[in-house]
Length: 364
Image (cartoon, rainbow, N blue to C red):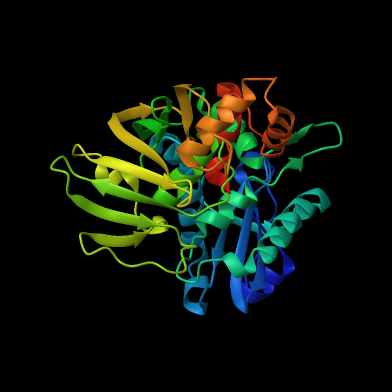
């Protein structure tokens, strides 16, 4: 595996460079050392697809083990894409030992620089406690790129998957996933979705998934309540944007980023997602089971039906009045209500549109 180092990294590490080999781009990674928030940060991108990762807050002692850091980073970013473990190991074995060389040319340096600029822009959102920056890595790999003048624009993660699929000669993604039925109570009607998502989805991510699946606009606060089969409240999960809240006397309260749905798949828990405390839209979530052979690294909405009310319609009562007007072109308020609904981007449920958006929802 060829590690193509910038001059700054060479000088900082005191690296003795070897002669550049005729290595395939797929087995070459360009690496730069930058400073973000006065912390040493390594940005690494693959020369074939601009897919990469970020290591943040490096200490001098850690930098002495650059080989280990890079192997850890490559493993982590591939695992985060839910690449099969055997394919990750096959790639590392095929790539061979590290060869440190200088950067290979202007086009590779330009791709690396673009990644570095993006990470500098994310400075305030980098996690102080994390060496491998999961969120920043996902954002970098969703930054659309054009690999040549002749090529179309693509996401780096898409290009990585294409390269890995050619390399492996088989499907490359496998992970455990949870199968959910979500019902939005509209009395007497319901809108419902069946969603499959990787099992390590946090409740913060589940909120984002439900916003897309039900075509909400994420205007309001929300919470999850987890209830056992005896009707006892087990956990209250709140948004990180909640400024004032009273901790429940009945159960523990955690932030949505602190807990995964995987912790609640072994028993018959009932999960209630309440969105918009004013309109009070309650979504009842039932865990149908766990799929150990899910072949995607993103959530999908496999079935569904029913439309979601417009935002700020006034709860169930307001929604019933809205439907009464919008279904009657002769109503005095029809034109005003129609214009208002268009402004709220009210539309019929469209599974294709939902799934296109779900493909990237976990990469925000």
